[in-house]
Picture 1 (cartoon, helix red, strand yellow):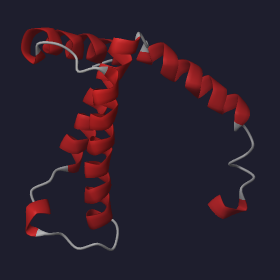
Picture 2 (tube, rainbow, N blue to C red):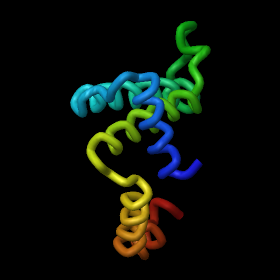
Picture 3 (cartoon, one colour):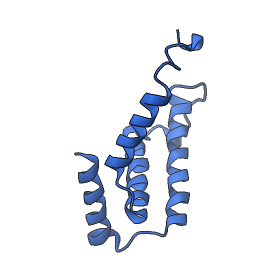
Length: 108
């Protein structure tokens, strides 16, 4: 699925199942909550925190997809074309960071 297809699929789901988009502020709060759930899994799976019984059924892929879904909702409702935005962002990073990471002693 391309980013364009994902944006269309989320929009169709919202219109057919979700009734309407939550407002942007609500979606920002939901995005923050979903990122927190990803952080919780990462801290337990790759960090030093131990799993609680309530955490053991959590799935990183599913939680990352939740983040992506809400991010796409925000893009859709604010008129952002994620394909174009990511393309421009990668171009910016490629120019800005052309030598920066290669010259970073911490990454060697």
